[in-house]
Length: 503
Ligand SMILES: [Zn+2]
Image (cartoon, rainbow, N blue to C red):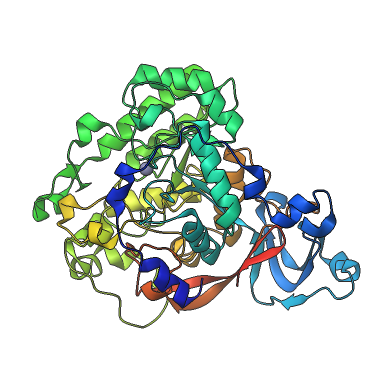
């Protein structure tokens, strides 16, 4: 998205409360004619609508963790598919195929983020599917998975269809959808999970909320085994967390803010392990933050329990001392952060609400455990938990601000810094956590680059240093703690089904 479009997007009157008056589109059904490219309606089976273009990426470092590939090789894309890799690519390229020199860059399967909030329907002053997808494309992501805590919640096929149509009309990348576990994400009654599966959801979750009733969670797991549908869970025990707004420890006491204890997450992780073991259903624990959670999942996996976990870049980079301000963070916990340049580190005040998210930033020991968990595969997926909010919502007292930060545009760089440039993980393993691992969880035929695969490709420069600026963002929201950071590693091209979605 160009600067002007960003400004226009941001110029929209913030009216996040407007959704309360919106009509609930519960009976929405897909209008295929409206949602499809008009050319395709006129000539349904013709080639006019198929991507007939080809593209040759020359001289890049091709990393495809699914095939154990890491070598300098050309990549030919044609008709929306991977047509040839390596020595065959140049010879097989049709005449006139555009060539792009990507020497020194990494060419990998299109990145996949299974945890984003695009706020449509209902809260489109924060983000829309169009702007969220533009941020994804800018960040190198070819596929994203939307969480169901929209207004209304994605707990019925009508809302799924509404989002599918909007994505088809306006999204630059693949937008997949999760359905709710319970009606209205209220935690009281199961949503129509079979109908949601038929409508096309790739998983179910009550993300933003957590099912507190253990028996209801058990029934949800038993039910989903009939559909081979993964269950994701935002792990938060309400009785333990109460009104907590940041990690319970030294800093919440110093700052006088209600604490969100580690046990509030670990209690539900333990519950999920027990229920996964009992039912045989796969449970995926979203955005893990504590050493105890990592330990529980590691132990359960060693026994073969169908459990998995994910980690977000902010949780393996920042700590709770960041809430006390940059002058507290940098001299202490900040020393553990990989830093690329010689330039001054950015400053922020205490109680900055861009450091408020759920689950919260934890201690340095927790951060270390999460990094170890990602490195050894206990937490096999990296996600952003991209959670846009309006400026005015975040510009209030810390305790009153909504939880959440955006993340799609800094996710790749921050992951590379903390996991690869820091020497903690090989580059191919970091890419694996962002491609084939999330694809496998949601049974998606993406995240690998074999011949014949859909040509979703990300090209990035792992060593490029750049300053992440809020004025450049493609998201409608700017609630992000990493602005003005010097980052190392930058997306240079996002290709979706053979077409360049961002460059
Ligand atoms: Zn969540």
